[in-house]
Image 1: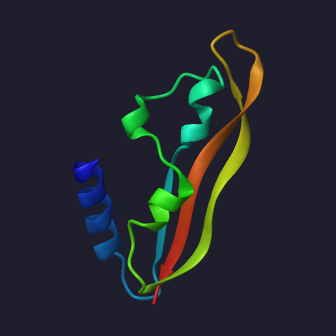
Image 2 (image 1 turned 180 degrees about the vertical axis):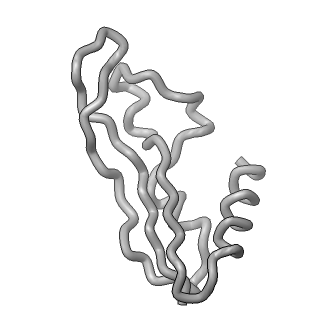
Image 3 (image 1 turned 60 degrees about the horizontal axis):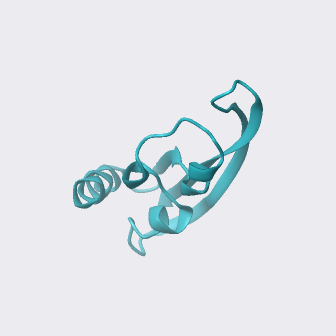
Length: 89
């Protein structure tokens, strides 16, 4: 978690004024949905993403966005992506 936080802070630091930072990751809520996902420590929630940037940003979107995806049996289920879109001031 500390390494991930460092990486995202460095990415945010690299965004020019008025530039956009977009982070999309698998949302934690999908752990119990039967979807193939990375280990739990590599999943996100929108509030965690928001916490990775300081007050010098305009938050455009910070949410879990639903999308269809296959479960382990090949059936379609709703998956969620944690999305942060922010503009540097």
